[in-house]
Structures are given as C-alpha cells and as structure tokens.
Image (cartoon, rainbow over all chains, first blue to last red; front, top):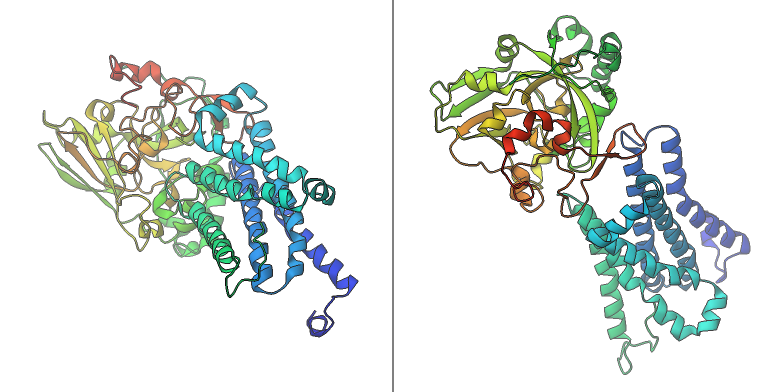
Length: 220
Length: 306
C-alpha cells in the first residue's frame, strides 16, 4: 500500500481502484456480517431482537452520515473521486434501514399490521422514523445513472437534497426512543450539524461575486 | 391477607444450584473478585430459605437475569451493570430505617439475613421498556422490616434511597438521573405481603449488578420501582420524590403499576417480550397480580394515577 501511494500518476491504476472499491464494500458489509455472526453465536444478549433492530437502525444512520460527509471530505481533501462512493454508501444505508424496518415489522410485531398502524399514528418516534424511510425511497429508486439523465442533473440534485430532511428525522427518531442518556443521538445530531454547517459556509463562500468563490454550486 | 401458594411448583423450573454455583465460581475467578480460591470455601454466603408464593412459569435463565438489566448507577446500557459492577463492595453494609416511627434503627445486612425468615419467591418482572422476566428472588416481606421500627400514624409513605458511591458506581459520574436514586411506595403498598426485600437470587446472595446487597421487589409495578442497593428507608408523611418521576413526570408516575391500558407516552404497554421468547405476549393488569393488589387502588383513576 505504501509504495502504491507513492505513485505520482494522477489517475490511479485500475487495480487500485477496484481494491479501494472492494474495501468500501467490505466496510459497508462488515456490520451486517458482524450482527449475523453474533446472532448465530447467540451473543446478541438476552434480548437479541431488540439489539438487532437497534443496531441495524444505528448503522443505517451512521452510513447516512458517512454519505453526507463525502462531499465535504472530497473538497477538503481535494480528492474529488471520493464522490463516486456516495451512491454505494447511500444504498447501503438504505439497505440497513430497510432491514431495520423489516425486523421491526416482521420480528418484533410479527406482521401485526394493525399494531404497526397504531404505532405510526400514536408514537411520534415511529411516525418520524417511518416518514424518514418513505422519503428515502425516491432517493434509492433514482440513484442510478439512468435516473440522473432522465431527471436532469439539477432536478436530480434538488430531489436528493431530501437527505437534509431525512437525516435529522433519523436523529430525532433515535433521540425520542432513548430513556435518559441522550448522548448517542446527540452525537449523531452534532455530526449532522457540522456537516450542514460546512455546506452553509461553502455556499456562502462560493456565492457569485465572492472573492473566494469557485462559482460551483453546492451539491448534496 | 391470604396469599395462595402455588403447590405445583417444581425445582425443575430453576437452574440446578450445583451447576449455578460452579458457574458462579468460574465467573468470580475470571473477574478476579474476592481472592477466588482461598475465600471460596468459607466466604460464600449461601442462603437458607423456604419456598414462598411463586409463579409456576418457567424462570428466566440466571445468565440472562444477571447480564441484561437496568441499573443506571453502572451505566445506561443493559449490559453495563454486569460489566461495570465488579468494583462495587456490597459488604459491610448497613441500612438506616427512620422517620415516622418509634424505634428507628440502623441494621447490618448480615443481621437482616439472619434475623428474617427468608423465602424464595418466583415473581414476574415487567420492565417499563416492554420486556419481562421470571425471577427467583430470595428475601423477606418489607412489612416485617417496617414493623420492627414501629411506624407511627404519620407514616403515610415509605421513601427509599440507593447508596451514593461514584468511585464504585461509574454511572453516578453522569447526571443521567439526579443521584442518589430514590423510590417510594404508599404505606399500604409497602405493607402488602407481596412486597419483598430481596437479598438473594437463584438461591445465592444478590449479584452486584442486580442490586446487592438489598433491593426492593414490587412485582405488580414496573421494574424501575424496585430500587437497588438500598441504604435508607424512611417512613414519611407526604409522597416522596422518586428518581424517574423527577426526570420525566409525564412518563413515569409515582404509582407505575403495570397497566396495558395506560401507554407510556412514547411507546405502547399493551404487550411485552418475555426474555427468551420470540413472540410478544399480552401484558396483564398489575402484571398478573391484580387478584391480590387491585383492592389497594379501588376507586382510583389509574389513568390519572399512572
């Protein structure tokens, strides 16, 4: 790895590109593999269903935040090619959230849809979580290159800014189910605020006529 | 009040004591607590007790009871109490019993264990979070302890307080709750024969993570009413402050009787997951103890006094 990094060529080799991609995939798969292994070994504790649902949700939220961090990271590190991982990570986040929902509906409620509907109407944390999930669906569906072309870059970008609403819904969803120790959801909330703060700053700095401006519109 | 005993209770429902003791020795050794080998012979405080009022339901495995519970003094995660309670010293220990009584006293834990007729009581435990267990406690009725200090007519409530030891209880370093933990009961609830002061679990002394050396068990109320590691019990005239009620009064009432018809504001209380079971089961009013305790609340609006 060390010698590969010394390579001066601007465009990394195909092999290295594939390796990096494989690493990202492995990293995204790691939590589910780890959960499956713990479950198989009976190490999810006395209440494995609760643990599984919670962990799937938390990993979904983490990956959403990683996805939101990519644009700032690409700009700050001057590594524009990082952006190619955004779709992969976003789709993994969506997958974890789908599993989170499926395990809640299928395992916890055992497909009791009447109870599910009552929960959605009566429990703010479930209402918000479900809203976040529904808003994620169009983003997952339009994640392909075909849809970017069909919608046009600008419209596609606008649609995908929904993520700025979805992530805080996820954070509040988490915050509301915690009994007393709000530190974990607050940490995720803080990360979100920082990432959005960077975007606001970036948009301001690159506004037309700004001396520091690059003229590039801010992107999700 | 007559408490019906369950005649068909068998010991098969409970982990074999020998097997359990072996496990315990192993765990103690691993944790490096109490100079394992040398002390193992004479230091084990085995409890002698008779069988008392119990459910015939299958007891939750000891490993689950001791590895999954809430004890915020040791951390907010349900695995934290088992993980972080190794440094806690439940002995020597004294409890102060005072307030509206003629004979306030301070009593040591060994005297409590020797001076009371211990019973094993296998009770259901329903957590406010929606899970439940069946737990074989060993203890004595709180009413016996209260009678020993001769409460006066001013004793309308009982206030309990957990020990304050931030050096041994890392969770007390965070102000998740307003420490020390406090709980309370109305005097008739406290004098009810089902209300238990537990000193043991699965036939042995209470493990640190489950509230050693002395805790309250009120089987018809949500688990958080069962205050742990008690150092003070006061007979008082007005309703005492309780820890969770103080944090979120709309969510955790003073009474906190198990009630499937009164939801927690953020989640339903209609069903529960019994630890070890796959499907959720219906939650019973008063956690199934209504036959014995519903009279205490006759005429009260339980939606208002949740």
